[in-house]
Amino acid sequence: MTVTDTVLQDRKIRINRNDLIQKFAALAGLVLLVIAFSLTSDSFLTTSNFVTLALQTTTIAFLGFGATCVIITGGIDLSVGSVLALAGVVAGLAVKDGMPVVVAMTLGVLAGGVCGLINGLIITRMKLPPFIATLGMMMVARGVTLQITGARPVSGLGDAFGVLGNGSLMRMVEEGANGFPKVVFPGIPYPVIVMILLAVAIAVVLMKTTFGRHLYAIGSNEEAARLSGVNVNRTKIGAYVLAGLLAGLCGCVLMSRLVTAQPNEGVAYELDAIASAVIGGTSLVGGIGTISGTVIGAFIIGILRNGLNMNGVSSFIQMITIGLVIIVTVWIDQMRNRR
Image (cartoon, rainbow, N blue to C red; front, side, top):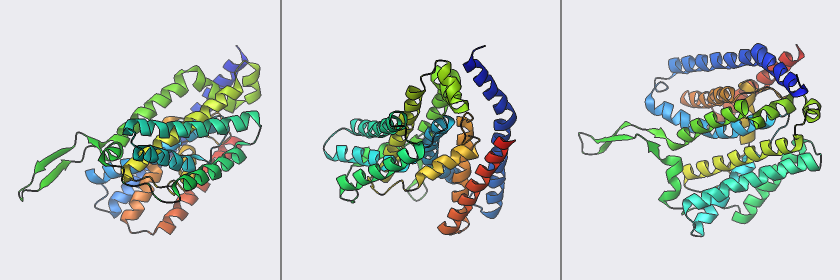
């Protein structure tokens, strides 16, 4: 048995004993939240609210998927909120210059990937801690976004720009008794479909590919992974590029929902991304994490915000509540690792 096999076997044992417990605990918390908010608000358990909730959760999920891959390696990415804004602005400016929407959004996603590549190179080549490298990228990306837009929104992008963010599959509308259209079923929003496809694809990458196995091996024991032949630097760069691409995609989808490229969008979104991963069982020390857990974590945050809004709780109290959830979850993770 090679060193890599030993590391991966150890990881499997840790997942069986710890990660599954964390995931099911998060799932139980999700169910309890649904029950609690359904009792406090009559509008919570409605089709339209669930569609809205799923749509709002996609932003957290997109960023959370990237955060999961990075955290599994033992790293962190604080730049995704700013990268999101930069990617959306790049796509918006490209449309304003006459480019087709598909090409413009592709440029936006690639802009996010470039930011991720720079993060990875700084961490692997310059040997800077991920916290410092991505903190610097957070400031740089936000500054570039504000500079190229003059801190003003990019508007007038046309209806085609809003199709990805506002369109839906299987939407059913019929004519009402008063002659006005009546929505029978709001449909499945395109961002939700993209979220589901991404969740499946990245889960397969993590569990079934060499790249995914190397991510876990690095997070479990980087030196052992290196000695067993894993190209640690290249794998780490790949993780940060993936996080950047997902942040870029998230920026394009979010700006499409707004039909305006907002340079100030995405502030503090990186905290939601990290929180969704950790709540879902991803360990901050690396080596443990799943996409299914991150989806659960994303929906916990989304339901908290949605339910508290419906109950008239102020945004300040919401920040306190979600902050406490993050603190408790990380504390549980630390206690689990000590044991």
